Image (cartoon, rainbow, N blue to C red; front, side):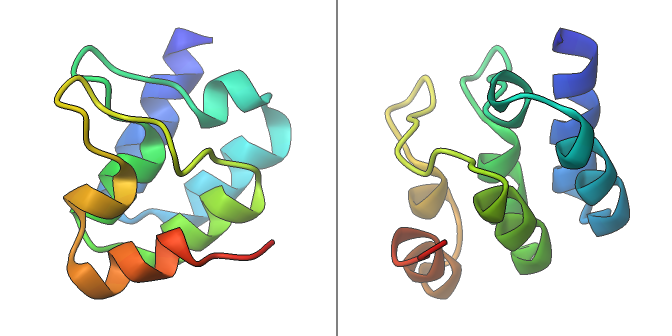
Length: 92
């Protein structure tokens, strides 16, 4: 699981929407909500690097937008305000 979680986190961080789609279509919620050693999930990384399409893919796949990093920040809080509002108000 960790290897796939790391691949998903890295794809979300780089904005590779096609890889994010591929991984989430084949994995469990544990992978979608994988936390790295800083407590960042793939959703945190997509938000932090302003990749809205990746955020949408992750949220539609069931990413938990309430997970906090080691510093107590949600994905919405680490992103730009407009993307944070989008994440907080996302309806599946």
